[in-house]
View (cartoon, one colour):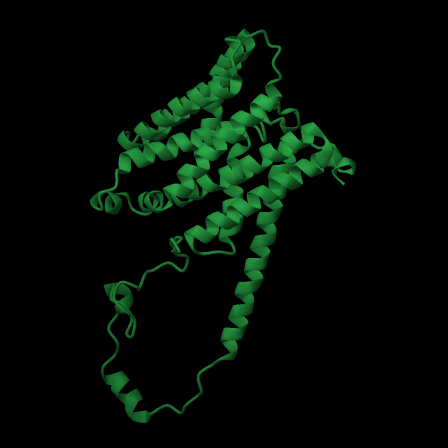
Length: 328
């Protein structure tokens, strides 16, 4: 049966396996990045990884493993800057990211200029070799072991570092591990969607899952499902429609996000209508109560900061959109 399908072609088999790896790994680490409001960290590390690609081409070694080493070093530097730098931290990060992009362009040029730079910038999943596939699979397994095996500890650090430190967790080591895992994920996705778009596969599936889920574990599972679906659909679309695989995967993921947003809006609208139908019965006002209210007006709670009557203290200014709960 497989002889008549695209699954019978060896290069498509490698492409689908690579898509499965990045479809699972990227949203898994992306859930933590979104929770920490570091959604663009993958984009910056992609710039740094390009220097590793250029270094690998210049030294005639594997560009994938060169990207891993340089991206991990860049991730450690980013984490140290984030932890210790104050006002100029964003400037230092910008210099690191753009320096990585410039260094990669320079090293690739010095290597002879024969390399196809676009395959690393925008991905080339259909040309994935057996060696690339083994490297991608090994790195993706490592990412999943960290993100799933240490989920409780990483979630605690993402929610409140001070609380996690008081609870006895090694916050600095966990932050560094999260940064290194992000760098590894960038190199996993480099052959699939390219270093310039790998961050999209970390963020967009998570954003789509958040439209329909609230608990952290459910969001991670849904995001991984969206990532795998978008990656498979993008590879299939690129084969039949002759479109760029990386761009197809990212655009399909964005389309899923838009559909999820519309569905979530319809659900909220439906709940609002059903809630509006259940109205309390209209009762006649009590003249004695109205007179007592006029003689003893309610204190100005909006200016004094006190919660309104009947509401527990501490809930007066709570936002309607709460952060994700772990959902254990």
